[in-house]
Length: 488
Ligand code: ADP
Image (cartoon, rainbow, N blue to C red):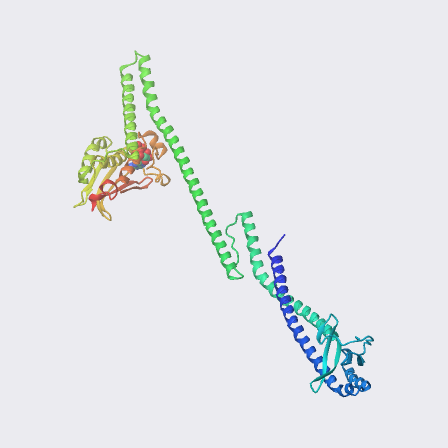
């Protein structure tokens, strides 16, 4: 497979090798030209010198003298032969070099020079006083050139190898700085795509481009990671919402079963008593009266229960009409007390009422505030023993401006574990007591809904055996809902 490393090595060898070969070829070309020119010059000078020294011998036909002169060439190893020709073209004198060249051309070769693969042939005229009296021809071998070429060959190979070695070292460093970060990045991508762990990050290193690539990759991982987290939290919220829905569903079913049980109980006893009267027409008038009284009180309980349930569901579903107006809370309390007094007298219970001066007027539904006070008062009357006392005190609150009503009784008190429960629907405390005392378990739930609507608070302080204090606060005006505009 083609890897980045291999590609880089291939590119390096091709580029470095080609550049060096071209440079060497150009250098060698020019060197060869210079060397050849120098050789021609050198041999020409030698031929001219020898030629001029042979003029006397040529003129006086002393070929022995000429050979003597020619022998001077033996110091030059490249000379293969040298021949002097007389003006008629015959060989006059010959010098044979060390290579032992036996045959020399019988006539003078054409004037000038000629390079063959192995020699340089050079012919010069011999002139005396402006008149040609013969030729000198010299053949020189190219051994020196061959040696030069060999040296060049070795030198070039050495330079080429050195260049390749140096560039390979540089390349391997470059390759390390490029391929290692890239390999790391590829490895990280594979790991992340395998284990989906988007918290991983790549280490930014190497050249600038790779650093910015790594940073972009890390940013991408960051984006995926935060999306992943969002998705997870959305799913968790969804789960929570689903759990809440399930809870609500359970509460709804519980509520329906409690309501149907609460409704069925009085109906069942009413039906049983009516049937008893019907099947026993000869029943005593006294007994009949007692049964009818029970039927009557059960009917009352049923109608109270239905009334309370209707109130609660209207408030909870928001379909109730709140008839808010300016009300003086002392009046409301006075009216409520007046309403409860006959029952309190029957049970020998005293009611004591105090109100602070200068209470602010409330902007609220008189009947609903009355309903809260009545629920608390009737509970107090209902739960305390004969001879007990109830005191209602009304005070002003300043933050927010409004009123606080506290209804304290000398009743049995409420176990601390039940204090948080009694404001819930159908929650009744004190098993023994509540078993005997009538009630729907809805009065406090309705009271809390009303107080909540007016942005107040309702709570109870109680101690077993000492009594209970129910307190509620109502600000002068609601700040939210449809009255918001009028408040300020
Ligand atoms: P109900 O009175 O119809 O049972 P409520 O919602 O008014 O329903 O009261 C819930 C429960 O709180 C009562 O059943 C009773 O156990 C307890 N409770 C309320 N008021 C008092 C009180 N003044 N003294 C003792 N217990 C009380």
